[in-house]
Image 1 (spheres, helix red, strand yellow):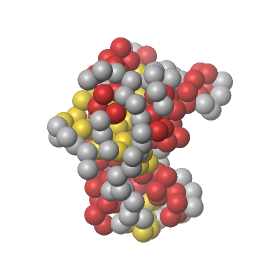
Image 2 (cartoon, helix red, strand yellow; image 1 turned 135 degrees about the horizontal axis):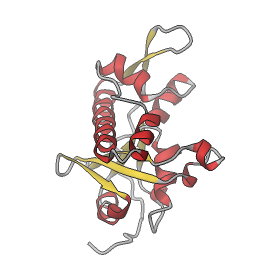
Image 3 (cartoon, rainbow, N blue to C red; image 1 turned 135 degrees about the vertical axis):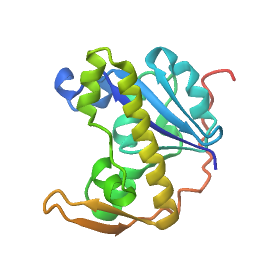
Length: 193
């Protein structure tokens, strides 16, 4: 199965737009891992036209909180509807087992032994300070962690997480049985290849 692991960073956040609506935010950078090329890459807003054919040609988009945050935001830049592509949202899979949402850092550190390198609010500050490479590096690190978490979940069908209420680490089983199912999404490519 061909897949793309992706993450975005924004140049602003919800208090800046007055509403908890990801589609109102502005993209700073989109970073991906493409399983077909085995490479990581980054795209600024003006380069997004280069990534749409990659998205349209993959079997699945993989992210963390991507169905709720990343895809709705990216849709405002895309001529079609990215929610029509097969999406594997790791946070959603974990939430289905746990019954609540858990951040990437709270899962990655105990499961993989590797955490996030910073916080999204720090990336916004870097962006505002013109530290674009720091934002890209941070976003690529999140993509690497998400890719490793995806592979761990697929192979082992469990994750560990740190419970914010008591600070203890717990393990939960996750169901990844439908991740490899190929879906006929019927999307019409928006761009000529």
